[in-house]
Length: 39
Image (cartoon, rainbow, N blue to C red; front, side):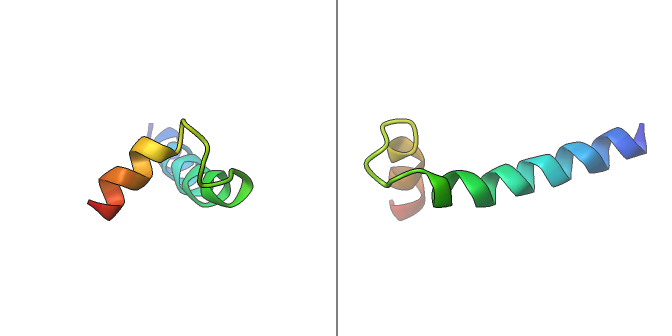
């Protein structure tokens, strides 16, 4: 159970790093997230 939790956490961290880098800021799927971060 703990291993699955750690794996999920690592995956989320990995995705949160890779997605903004690999996607342009104009991407509609990323825009709402950017608005949330930028206010």
